[in-house]
Image (tube, rainbow, N blue to C red; front, side, top):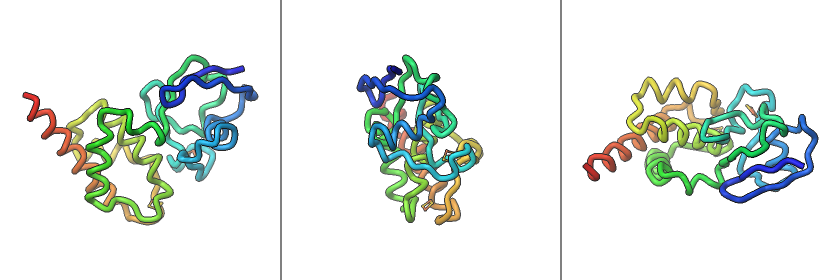
Length: 159
Ligand code: FES
Ligand code: FES
């Protein structure tokens, strides 16, 4: 049995030690917000947070989950950056088909949590592993930029 926390809730699951977190989420726990594209760590569709760090869930195997905190797109709302991130991406019409969206959003959530005022170069670097087949990336980058600007405005309002 492997025990970990998923979006703030305790989870206990009987999984083979080498079963991937992506498969556990989707196939064993029915949390299908996390997508699988390549299943080999190349596309970023499966990005989730593990202990606050963005990881490819297809490369995280079950034994690494013991005692960990996992946040998926279903738990995005619990993160302080979520409001600005969702608003920024919505205003920019960031996604088309949306298949890459959960992974991209979680990658950006990790970045903006660590670096709320991330530069364009930092945003681009953070998204290098998140592939999108539809948008050409411009709208995603615009949305991320807008989210960072909203977070900066929030910080200034508090000062
Ligand atoms: S499905 Fe995990 S990186 Fe592509
Ligand atoms: S919006 Fe379709 S893959 Fe990114």
